Length: 290
Image (cartoon, rainbow, N blue to C red; front, side):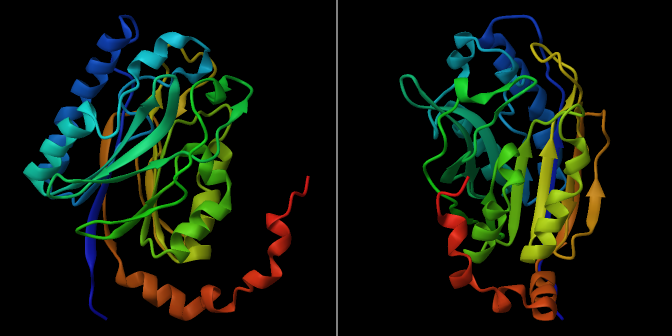
């Protein structure tokens, strides 16, 4: 069987600056990423994914309107800046940012930039958590309203779901049925809440849907978060559900993986989950059950 290899990567990173104005904090984090983005490009990475709202700390542990000032239009200044690197290195980029759609209307968003530097589109986080301790995202984000787009890039058809969305298997299923070959999950998640699920849910979803999944998490402790440690462990998992590469728990890191997209056909021809599914029997899931 012929191979169709796509070189993919994650950047996982700790926050660059704790004290300063919101604009200084934002700029410091963007600047910290640039050498890693350059490194990815020089290594021939074809699809690069950054972590959830990569341009700052995970601020949702406090409810303070000052963080609204870090949001911007998509496309906008950050995507324009990242487009220069995408074009320079012929590298598709997934760029998670805090989006201002209108004054006072904000989304947790991931933009997709193609390898020629063109803006492809965006995904807005669908499920918005508001859970203890410190995941107060409903204060900052409106639930996504763009559905689950599949982005046809130069190298692969990709889908995105952000952080908390990974706990809802419908997200991966819809994207796979719409033709996505690689799913990306940029995240900000801590050892006090979700670590036991980190290597359980998405390998299972990769196997159930016959797709590759790239899961990306930030690292370290930071202000204003005081409830736990971001544990990194970014990884790529293949359509068999096997983790093929995993980053450390505590280091700024670029991790890469060569994904053979022909493996998708091999896995699906063997299991035939999509052939044997019975959507007409699942209508109850769409009813307003408790």
